[in-house]
Amino acid sequence: MIPVCHVDDLPSGEAVRLDTAPPLAVFNADGELYAIDDTCTHQDASLADGWLEGCYVECPLHAAQFDLRTGEAVCLPARRPVRTHRVQVIDGVIHVEPSPSADAVA
Image (cartoon, rainbow, N blue to C red; front, side):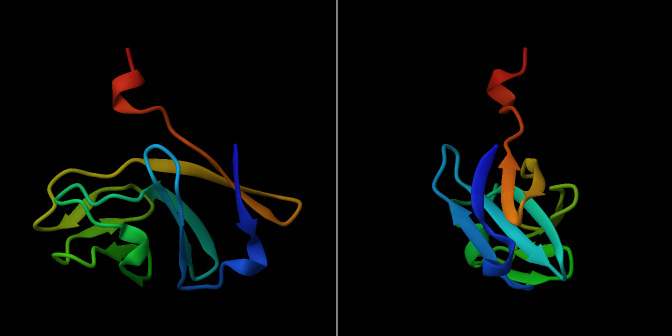
């Protein structure tokens, strides 16, 4: 589990980028916390820098959209999903448990 920040430090409608390998992004979408891979699958852009609307994030580069709940690309030009990751709040601190990478799956 990777500690991110105190839950009060991530207001609704905001995101934080984790400089992990690969980079992750944690979003507060109307009080619900979601974590996904931070890089758009269409082109190399940070989704944490995108626009959040409900449970969807729009890439700041070419407006591809992803569902934070599933990682699915819901709007072109992105066609491939981003990985989602488990989020847990422990003693007021947001933690992310990264999903295994596709390369690590046998």
